[in-house]
Structure formats: C-alpha cells, structure tokens
Image 1 (cartoon, rainbow, N blue to C red):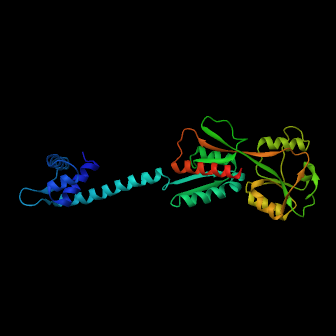
Image 2 (image 1 turned 135 degrees about the vertical axis):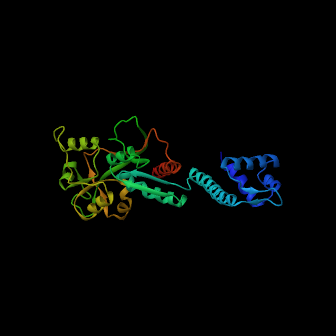
Length: 301
C-alpha cells in the first residue's frame, strides 16, 4: 500500500540514483530502504528502477510514478502549510451576520480591524433582522450573528452570549419643531415614527405610552433595518427616528441631529449578544472575529 512516506522514498532514489545516498537522505538504513523500494514495486506490479549492473536508473514506469509522486508530495506539503495558516487564521473564509444596531455601531470598526490583521482572509457580513439571520445560521450559511437578543427564542440548538446594552434614544434634525423642547412620546409619534423592526418589549412599551389596548398592533410610520436610511430620514424630514446613540455620534457632535427630551420615555436599550450554533465548532477565523467584536464593544464602553 502506497503512502506519502514511501512515495518520498521513491522520489529520493529517483533523484539520487544511489541507494546509500537515498537511504541517508530519508534517514533509513540501506537495507530498510531497499526493502521499501522493493515493496513499492511489488505493490504496483511494475519495475521502477534498473539496478542489476552499473548505476541505478529509472525505468519509464519509474519516471511516470516519480513525476506523480512529486506532485502528491508537493500537494501534501501545501495542505500541511494551509492547515497551519487556517489554524492561525491567516487563511480561510468566514461569514457572519449583524442586526441593524451592531451593523452600524460595531461592524465598521470590526471589519477594519479584521482586515488589517488578516488581509488574506475573505469575510462576508450579512446585515439583516434577527429572524432572517437566525434562518441563515440554522442553515449554516453564516457561522454566528450579533443582534438584539430580546426576541431570540430559547433554543437548545443555539448558544447565546450577551455583549451588553447599547442605549438608544429618539433623534430629529436640528431645525425640527420638537428640537430643544420637552415632549411626551405621543407628540413625537405624531410626526411619524421611524425605527428598526421592534422587539416585543419595545412594542409593548410604545403601546402603553400611546394608551393603546393590549394586543393592538403598533405600526410605525417607517420600519427599516438600515440605520443609514433612518439617519437620512432624520436629517431631511420631520420624522422622529429611534436610533442607537453610537450610530449618530458624529451627527450629534456636528449639531445636525439632536436628541429629543421625551419626558415619559424610560431608558431604552438594545440587548446585544452573539448567537452561534451549539453543535458546531466555529472556524478559527470566526472565533478571532468574535474576539475582535468583543474587544470593540469593550472599547465603546
């Protein structure tokens, strides 16, 4: 039976054309080396070397097999190298997802950091709401996702790891009629409320603030999972937009967006977390990505 070690013996003899030198090259006694070559020839049913008189020479079959053996040995060395690179996250692809808030507040910094540290790795990021990301995870199209955990149902197939809270508020452009004033939530709602897909606890809070009957649907004027679009709405219309604070820091510093003072609105947070499949070991690159995301969340405070 051929294996890589015996193929290396074949190549060594074809290149040295001398049993003693070839045996020394592969760290075998000459007798053991000769037995290995004989065994290869017997297994293949072909004579690979002429050695009865004068120097050792390869037969046509020997030339054919040596050429194939060199290619196999090269591929094996490449595979070993690639396995080491993969283990060290220098090779291999990964795909993961993010909900609207982490997509806007965490992922830009995460992707920049990962690109700087692992330039040879291909990364695919999917931005969507948690339901669709959950479907992608279960189908194993992504390795993990980061999202608001409040609606993610208990599932023994999932591992859920909290990342902490991201505070959120209501924002409007600087010239908005409510800017710089105190108001109640119903007043803000009347201007057109724009938000991402709302978790059930937030929908229940809004229903209470609007004094709606229990179970009555609460439909915002605009529901969109792309925070860049919501930001544009806040800047250019009178819509009142619910956003994570970290997503609009530059606008707040520039004074183009302002935070509403809503007197009856309690503190609102997105409960961020990482969701993975419990039965599946993430790739090394996925684990490095998760570690990077955690570090960025710590830096954001």
